[in-house]
Image (cartoon, rainbow, N blue to C red):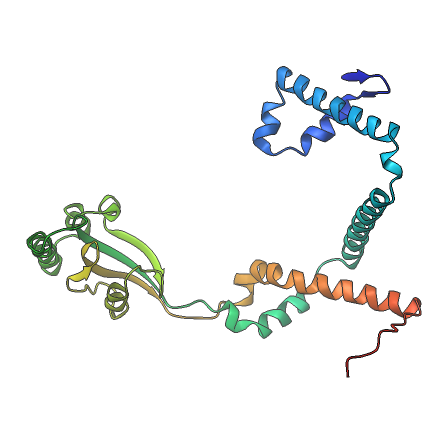
Length: 262
């Protein structure tokens, strides 16, 4: 027992169960003695309020009864569906493969490029001379790359977050890059090692190099099995529910007397 009041007690098991429903940060707060005392007090307050409501006969109001019945109905339906899904097991391997075949286009992976970028930034509201100066710097960096200087060394003299990663920009698909001109220049690169010229951006100028390319493809079933299962599960659950409803309707002599709309 961790609390008491005129009419009942709060047990340690009740405290543990109630506190386990709290979000993690709050749960940590109530793990301390002071927090536990506060939480037990709040539980007692709730019991006292419910007790007083019953004394006043509020629990007998028809509208309260309806809400209680609606909540009970919702909870037991949730438990029924969960039990039916558990009994039905999980989608079979063949069902997953069928889903995969039917949704190959949705699972397709687009063409992706692994890029490096050497960038020169210009301040917001830069003047024309400032932009011209930044472009000249970008052109010098581009020339160094064209001359065969190591990418990491050239990128270190650039700007932006890529400079600390040896110019590494990462994998991108169409639509990932913020500006169309940069995307067009990057996806025009054909061979690994190809480098764009200087590309103007709103925030400055970039030179992009192609490090690796992955063509558009549909991955094999084994590669995306977990994703397929995640996508197929809602559909499978819907079929389980529809099957149960069909059985219940057949056994329940269901009739609907509302006329159809002409």
